[in-house]
Image 1 (cartoon, rainbow, N blue to C red):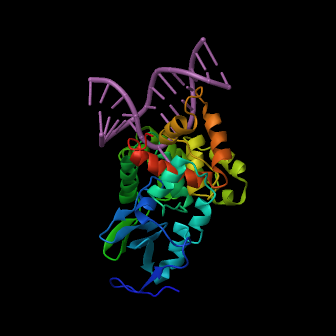
Image 2: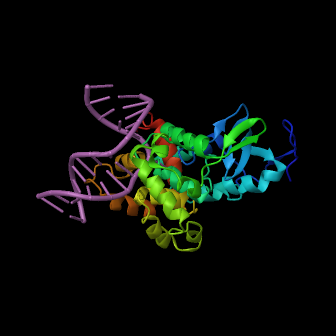
Image 3: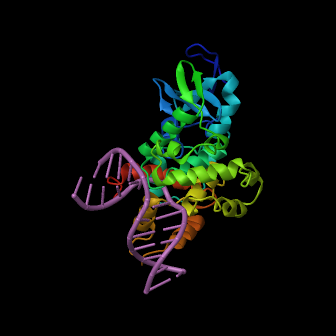
Length: 294
DNA sequence: ATCCAGGATAGCG
DNA sequence: CGCTATCATGGA
């Protein structure tokens, strides 16, 4: 059991158990392009998990929060999964090994479904800082103000909120050509035409085919939602960074592979946690593209 | 200024 | 089927 050593006002539990289960690099996890709204504080990050405002505090290679939020936080950060076990399934080639060594505590977050879908709809052809800016603008304008330990953080506006907006409301948040997709998706979810929660109980391929009905959702964004929202760890999003990396490292010298060649290679080569491996590779490659040229 | 960004899609040959 | 132009916006 955690010692419950206390920082600040609230009683807290240091979320720590056996190694491999609770180890986490909070900064890499929250700032690696899978989730976009956590704001740095002097000791960690403030933000929302769904409707609940949370202050996540770094405690060495682990995380601390208030005791009453421990279950919520453990679920969101996936702390009950053995990171050692997951990393142990990765191939042990030089680039994969370097990616793991670069951020050994990187984890995948279990995101609320609508928030995950909407955020990745806004991510198309945008840089990560801009995706964060859009997420925060939507929260500040249309979310709900909440407060945790002196920090004001905003919830993500639900589909039922965005569904009632005008296109101009979203354009004001700099969504550009993505605005109409977010609005249409919100209306499909709000009306019940698409039941995101129900997709938790169907096969990955069934869920994928339903997600494709949403405007603006293609293969890459569907894979992001399957991976970050539904914990389908074999889903392997291929964005511009991963595509370049695959071509340079794993398809070097070969005739130009097609996207489906890349997808099938990744599924076969990176194994049952291919999507998890992908996040390590993405974070490493994006931050080291110069140094990594072997 | 020119090119690029955690893409999707209609329209072409 | 595979390729291309285009979409809106800001950063490098």
